[in-house]
Image (cartoon, rainbow, N blue to C red):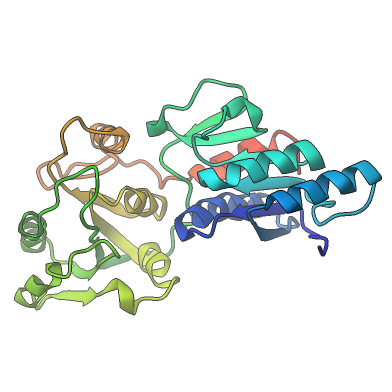
Length: 297
């Protein structure tokens, strides 16, 4: 296996959302220290782990010989992170509440709504990390992000369209609406009733389209089932609002996290349009500064 001549390695489970979180931290680390290099590697097989052990015992070079830090998100990455930490000696950073004890990892960066343990190696963040950065804002440009049915909320096309209707009546901005993989096919049937609304279905967008739109949009309204998009809008420096949905019985960590955002006035609702003047979220940069202070890189 060819050596990875990089300071940092992202262990990927192949899920774009998980890789995006890891890249959010790596991007921030490289903003703090531009000389750092990074590569990506798939989850290690048992054969690869045993090969690393053999290389360590015999003193041979291996693929991770030069790697100082490994980063991973998603339960399937945990064994690989720990194997590399224990066998290779690099530092392992997990970006979620892990399925294994947090104390086993060099560092755990965990969203506060997941109730992270109070440990010296653990950092609580406001939401999951992401790659968003504020850009030059267009005052008259607004973005609407529509999710779909989820395990946390009872979805209703009509309920969301009623709120979109109220938003369009109360504002003079130009609004661009996009959907997601979870958006029901029935949802866009109502879009023709709003000629002032520009619609871009998610299947017509590229991977760079949404970050570019968030960077320039002055305001963003998100259906509250899309919690990751709420935090990305906040990180991009948008005035962020949520279209509310009925919470399923019992609530969840996601709904509790949204409740805290509303209570702190970081996000608006149609019935509470006042918001705080907090600066854009910069949790990835805060996490990177925390890592850099440890002297691992």
